Image 1 (cartoon, rainbow, N blue to C red):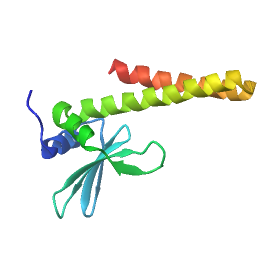
Image 2 (cartoon, rainbow, N blue to C red; image 1 turned 30 degrees about the vertical axis):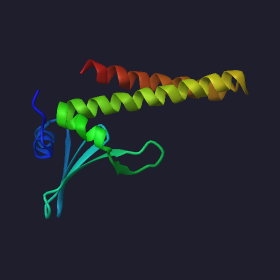
Image 3 (tube, rainbow, N blue to C red; image 1 turned 135 degrees about the vertical axis):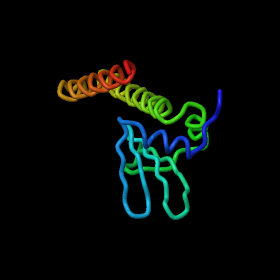
Length: 130
């Protein structure tokens, strides 16, 4: 299997109909399922960002995730990262539900957690069907 370059990955993201393109002075960017790839016009450098788990802004992905993009390409790598994010969220909700069941047993909090779990499972299922 041929590995891809960052330029090929950016071009793949740019051509993808499901990816949102953002072009501004100085850079071009593409976003799919929260993952962003940016190409700086001045230096032609390409960087991939993903939202941080604990902070509400984008951080550059680690080297191991770059390898995932080189190997699988834009769409498959984004899908895999997003599924992993959903699994992490489901684990946190499951843990919160068990703490609530063993602790306060607040009906309102349990209902909210179960609704959240249902929403995440729907997103996960829809993404798996693609």
